[in-house]
Length: 128
Image 1: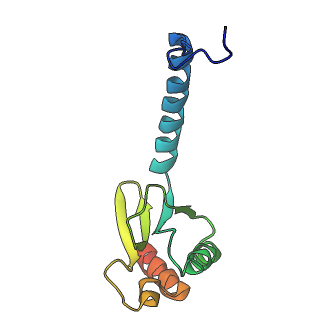
Image 2: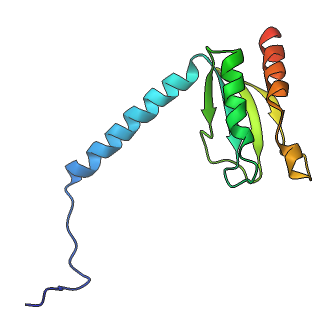
């Protein structure tokens, strides 16, 4: 018998083995939704293939320095192409603090100064 059997030889997986990971995924998703529903958080959406990605590191640090109780989340979903956007989320209410989607060229205009984002955050928190 040759060492290579052919393309038709596949292993069969038990139905129980397949069901366990789905249950774990559902539990993780429920826990994540519960976590997302409570408290204020700032979502930073950025396209990761950009040349000026250095800016994305300064903004979370500045936001946490200004408001240490906030959670900062980077790209919770797949970001849009050429995007950079900072959003404050509390429950189901969203406030866009800064968006660079329709700005530029030059490319540098698509990214905010951290001071601008912090002042926008303070204004949004005061208006509530």
